[in-house]
Image (spheres, helix red, strand yellow):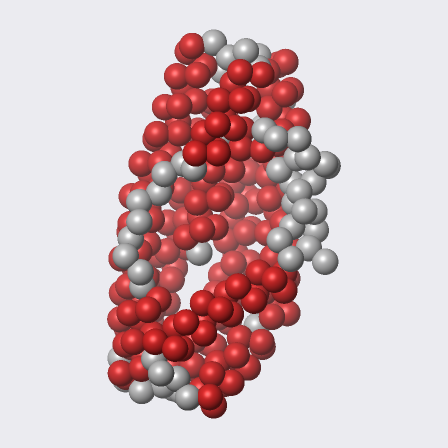
Length: 263
C-alpha cells in the first residue's frame, strides 16, 4: 500500500512533471498476472519465516485466489479514476470539488475490497499458531524507511522546468512544493507504518478484536485520502502560477500519464 501512496503523491505533486519523457497516448500498464506473481513471492517469504506446512500454504493461496476477480476490478477502477482526475486537472480551470469527488469514489471502492481482504485475513488467522502468526508479522512489518522523491523524478521536474522556460519564482514554488509534499508524506507514512504494526499485533492474538482492526483500517484509509486531497489542492493552486503556453506543455505530459486499461 505504501508504494501506491507514494506514487499517488508524486502524481499529484508535480502535476505531470514526472512523465516528461516521450510516450504514446497512454502508458502500458503493468501486467496484472505478473504483478500478482511478484506479490506471491513476498507471501512465500512470509510463510517461509513461519515455517508453514504445505497444507497451510495451499490454503493461503486458495484464499488469495478467491480475491482475484475483485482485485482485478479494483485495478481497472483505479486506472479509470486516475484518468478522470487527469482529465479534470488539465482543464483551464480545474475544480477542486470534482477531483475530491473522484478521490472519495476511489476510497469507497478501495474500502469494499479492504473489507473482503479483511475477511480473508481472518480466515488465514485460524490456519496458524500464535507463534507462526508472530513470525509472519515480524517478516511483514519491515523498518520504516523515509520517503524521498526519486532522482529520476527530480531530473524530470528539471527537464520540464527547462522546457517551459520557468522563471526563478516558478522554480522556487515547484521545489518548495516538492519539499512540503515529502514532509507531509513522511509524517503520513510513518503514522501508517505504526498503524500497520498495531493491526498486525492485534491479528497475532489468539482472539483478535475485529472492531479494533476495522477502526485502524478506516483510520489508515482516511489518512491517505486527506493526504491526496491536500496535495491535489496545492497542485491546482500551483498550476495557476504558470502561463497558458507553459500549462499546455505540462498538460501534454499529464495526458501521457494515463495508463492503458489492464487486459
